[in-house]
Image (tube, rainbow over all chains, first blue to last red; front, side, top):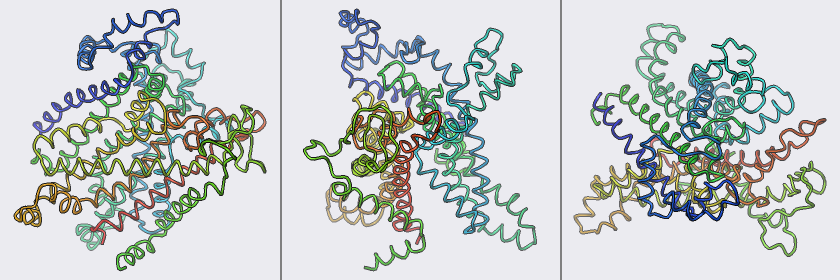
Length: 342
Length: 293
């Protein structure tokens, strides 16, 4: 088992290396002049375009530029992101907790709703609950997050004024940036609680409701489907029939016997679900103007902020690779056949 | 004929897949009849450019002249929806077709030859699959410049690797089968074995997954348009029309739903289009997947 994990770990830097190389290759579509203009803040500096190109080595062949960039990264210098108005390393530490918090807040409700209704839909197969659940699942799967997000904003922000976009109101913003507010975790909800700021906690939570709901609705379908089919399979197995034959109540059979086995694929799927959420936050954060990695990445891409693009996509890809690896490892832990092959 | 009967049998048991057929059929009809449903103005150079009635920045609610209302800068939403159906089909079908062909060819080669060819191709797919697909797509469109063509290229680039990997896996199992050994014994060339024997016998799972992923591809392409990276403003494209609505979700002070149509109408269209493809994909799986029989 350890060997398998180590092998996967060793593979990770290779993938990350490939990821950066691919990103660099993409960036070669931009002319040196375009990439240089990013460093110029004032139109009067335009005459220095050539010297900027010279300074950053933008006309050198791609492998050379890649080497220069790698050296920079090794020194811990990822450059300055124009869209975030701060160095990339700082931007990562400021945006990542927001995205992480949003993903966490969405993740557990997805697990609960997905497993609960997945089981319900298997136990009452072809009954009303089953049809309703599957209908909700396939509509959620078909509804683009930006459409759902905009409709939710229209109703719950425009009409009802309950849940505003953004991460918090101006009041909370002043509060959390005050000197006496201590940032323990970077997760705004927890930090507000630890600082004893109830009003701010409620405010932050209010801002999380709509984006988390959007993520829930568009991501829960996969989990529903897997739980349902896995549960159906378990319920048709011999041990369930034996349990029924010896007169166990149906509740005990479902909760104690079938569910425990049905959850195995669900466990391995949950990290894939996390991956799906990472993709989902890109659009969701943009719609709700939520200051996380996704919104930063989109803004950086729209404004061709090269260090910003590299920083945010690298982080996203890194998280993605880790989540994939966790999924593989979980799978190997659960299913011994994989380990032998690895 | 028997095959058609089998298909009908599967469909009759599943009213939802009939709904899928109905939805896609409806959109096909709209796309085909676009010049009749929304006749372009005489002398317009490009039928996909939505006609503008005035330049007022505020959207106008549905009325007799504009049954779906107008967006900001007075683009007629009805015209945009009708011609946007053609855009939606064009994008979805081209992306799926091209990425499936690339996936089948590269996956087939990787599985058939194995060795370093396989290693290089599969590590390359690893790298592309290491990105959430929307993230890489955004980067590609951003560096190549916003346009519908670049959206299609970007979505194709992020879509083909999963088909290639699936294809490779199938080829790996098919190439060990007896009929391949028989063909080789008869002196068939590699290309002949690959094209005549292996690909036709390993293609179905890829086709099923392709039909299931149609909906996701439409959503990704629409999301790029929504981010302002796709078709230019005023082009008949649903995602682009939704991006025009972003500033109008609040309505006016007296009426919070004043501009509901700018989000709701194109939103519902994308939703139904994707729903149709997803339901069709489910049906295709039931029909093509031999394990279900």
